[in-house]
Image 1 (cartoon, rainbow, N blue to C red):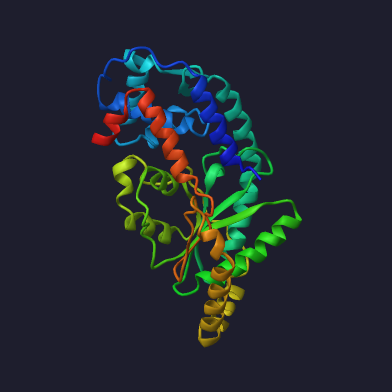
Image 2: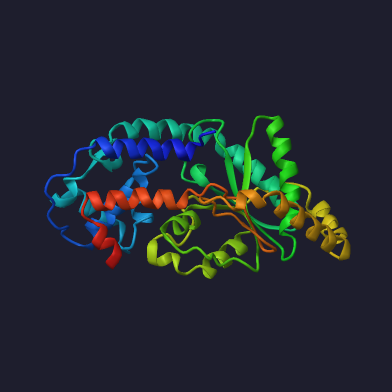
Length: 329
């Protein structure tokens, strides 16, 4: 089955193939001009025209005030060769169709948002869960439709990653009965917050996630990954801020943790981890897999989208003469 990401990347690749090459390029007038174009190019991989405040927040490799971004977009002749503004959205020229696409996706995202908040609160009450954050397309309000996945990033107490995952899968199945598609696709222990993968794709995933519970743990995760500032220096806090949705059930959560916090819980954690790693052994061998399954991580990314995303982004940089700028920044 072709996933949404695969379809999107195929569309972008075919569009790149038929697009005319940009006219003869002069050098950008400054670091900010090239940073803005790089930011728009990265978003274009997802067919996502950006508002100016989003460009400022997710500005790649350059720290600049909002006023400077506004000025560059309004006055840089070099930048205006390649980007335009339609209904408040900044996009590459000849990509006008993405504006209506974004409006459609944003409307779907608004409808999904309350579902995500409610189910995020439910996941936060599962045993040993210490943080729940919304990730993926919905975190950028770019959900494809009303049935898109609700992607969650979950942090757990140490030595209970697989127990928390087992509980979350029960919620996945319950949600599916109501037509809701939960996807807790990255679960890790609070002792393993630093990310091994350190590139623009992972920096963006961290910067765009929206914590729904466990805000202290979220702050600890950002502090454990200071390298993200090299890629996205303006993105130091969540772009969309959410207040925690407090649901009843804290007593039951504590009771379950008490029952599963000793030798019985250790035995179940080990059994569940070994059982699932055996089950996923073949998928882990895929050439395009970036999954990580161990005592501290359940990262079920058996089809990696990070490297294809970066490949398309770098193709765009080359077409606009910015590949040397990216390597030197």
